[in-house]
Every structure is written in structure tokens, then in C-alpha cells.
Image (cartoon, rainbow over all chains, first blue to last red; front, side, top):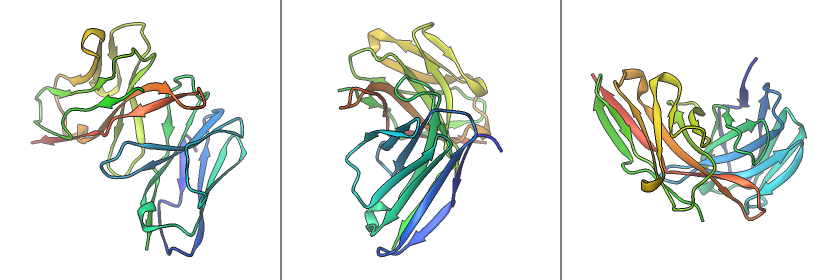
Length: 114
Length: 116
């Protein structure tokens, strides 16, 4: 498999549930990202990992918890979410973080919080 | 702080017509500018990237963009639209985050419709 793979593609969860989003990249990149895409808003960078170390956390609520066990895998753990957290969550990777390297995106997880 | 403005949230063209999607950035010259495309139910895909080597940048699928410093613009064009070009297009420029790391500043996107 090539590129960036995200699972699941769709997720519906209640406000009290705990779930996780998974991302895997097969490109040999050193940086991985979580973005949130909502209608009528610019893409929001949530977290950046470089060589498994978190290098950026853009004031994201603690109900979102990232995990990067190795340079190929990235998780986003979700708990006690709010309806306004419903969005498309995109994972991306790049050769290096913060150097202008193009981003390679997965197809996203469409999250609906009920 | 860097900002990106995409003029026109929706653009509609006829098949075979010129495609012009506009992007303007704030005054300080960013080192990198990008155009990404997002097809329905997919993630974003890089169309092209400006890195100061040449002001006219050619990308995939027949798209190109011209960097104009005097106009602070990086408009995307394609001479002849194809039905398969219908998608959302995003302009992005590199900026600086609070942690002094380079990060992308995104426009709101332009939805391109191509009519038969």
C-alpha cells in the first residue's frame, strides 16, 4: 500500500464515547500532522509530530489526544467530544516538518458527534 | 501575520473554457506558496508549489500558477477546463507559528464547477 491511509472513513459517536482515529503513512516521511476541516473555515492545524516527537500543539482541547508510536503511525484519541467537533479530520505527512515540504494527505475521517 | 485570500468561494466554467482561481497573500513575501486540490470524499493533493526558482510554476493536470510579487498574487489557471477538474481548490502560503516553526496558512478554498 502506498500513500497515507486513514481509518475509519466515517465515525459516529456519542458525546460520552471514546474512540480513536488511525493514520498510517507508507512514504518514509519524518513528519505527520492532524488537521481539522470544517465548512467555511480554513484548515486548522491541530498537531505536528517530527520523528515521533510532538513539535506543535495549536491550543487543541484536551478531549483530543494524539499519539505517535513511530514515524509511520499516528493516532488521535477522542473522548467526551462536543457536537461542534463534528468535522473531517485529515492526517498528512511530509518529508520534514516546517521546511515547506509538500503535504501528502489521507482521505480523512468524517466524524459526527451526536 | 501571514494571511491568504481566495476571491470567490464558488467558480463555475463551461467545459473547455479558461479556469482562473484567484489567490492573494499578505504583504511579506512568503518563501513557499502552494495550490492543493480536493476531490469529493478525498484528502487534499498537491497541484503545484512555488519556491522562487521561477515565477511561472507548472503543476499536474495542466494547471499552472504565476507568482506576481507586485500584486501579492498567486492565481491558478488552466487553459481548458475538463469535467474532471470539478473539485475544491486551496491556496496556501508558508508562515511562522508561535513556536517559530514554519507552518502553512490556508485560504478558505474555491469550489470549481465545470458545466458540460
